[in-house]
Amino acid sequence: MSTDPTAATVRTLAVPGATLHYRFEGSGPVLLLSQSGEGDADRTVDLVPHLVDSYTVVTYDRRGLSRSTLDDPATPVTMADHADDVARLLAEVTDEPALMAGFSMGAAIGLQVAVRHPGVLATLIAHEPVVPNLLPADGRAEHTGELMHIQQTYTEGGAAAAFPAIARHLGIDPAHDRTEDGLTPQPLTPRRLANFGFFIGTEFTAVTTDGLGPAEIARAAAAAGGTRIVPATGESTRPTVHTYRCALALAELLETEPAVFPGGHNGNTAFPRATARTLKAVLAR
Image (cartoon, rainbow, N blue to C red; front, side):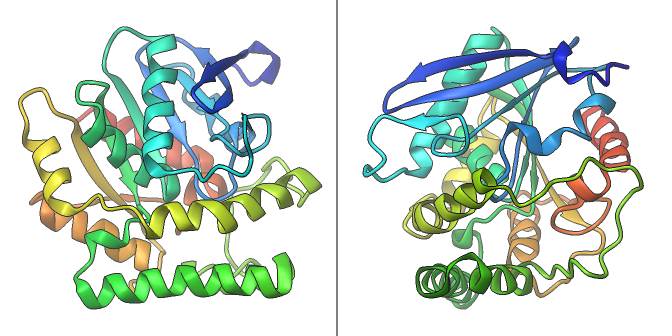
């Protein structure tokens, strides 16, 4: 099992409106990991080594994050942009339908890919997707309102004010939440702070203004040769968390049971070894 980050191949890809930074390593079927929040390609540093024995693992910085630069930073980024980026990125590394594990924002992007780019994904694990449209009208309004409140809080008070609101939104308690031992430190660097700013300021708007709904997702999953969509939840995520409720709504829509992953909303970074075992088991079904 490779644990040396230098073993990865690092490349860039020019796409309309941006240049994407991505990396891949391992062997086997292509598995794209798409992170939550401000997470870039480095956010899965502890997860990837436990997957490369079975998959060619691809990670990337979403456009606007870290090394994936925008041609015009003033141009809004949409969910369709993110879906197109994934389709183009996967076309660079494989000629076959790929596997994808998306977490929160990454899961929302994966659902967009399944709808907008049929045949690109064989299987999508959608872990607690941030997709308000999956919820009934009242829950959708609550979820959207909460995101807009966090966005306003960030605008008025910066990261220091927004972080507690995000933690409440996701049911996260940084002081008491458990993790596996020996994790790579993830300090709040200037680059990571900038990513948070982009995520809250730009991508929240992309989520709350997007029109993708349950009907389109159901059709994409039911179509011949369509994507197998596996809704997933964190075993310790609070049931009141909106993204948890989105995963349950997705499971109900697809008439299936959600896969349960270790930890809470950010379990893939808190429990990477256990997450890798669960990913392999779910993908093998």
